[in-house]
Image (cartoon, rainbow, N blue to C red; front, side, top):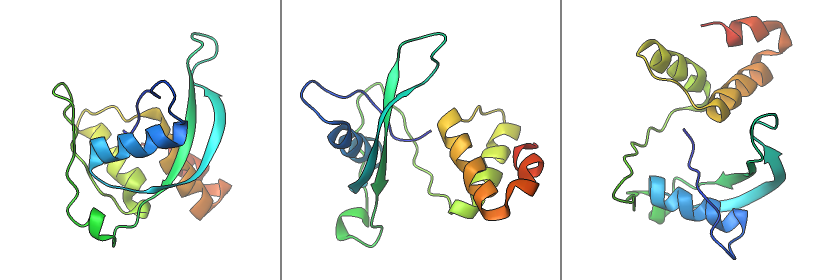
Length: 127
């Protein structure tokens, strides 16, 4: 999964993304860019999201020993994975019975396709 959450009244998507990043992972970052509204499942719901790309400086003193600030009902384990290992890691988790978050899996496949080209599309999607 990726850090995510609701946008509070009066809060921008960028501010919400940075708040959720800090709460769920302990990391701080800066907003690089934000999308407009995106539909999650337009045939089934009117839910819309915004995608916020956040840059995290892992060398920053604030990010050396990140501390989550989770709600009582939340249990989130942070796993840092090298970009090149993202898709293989998600596939391994699938074999262990986990169901990956669509957005994260789509990101992993897109990164794989970008690195390998369209010729490797079937390999990128095969389990």
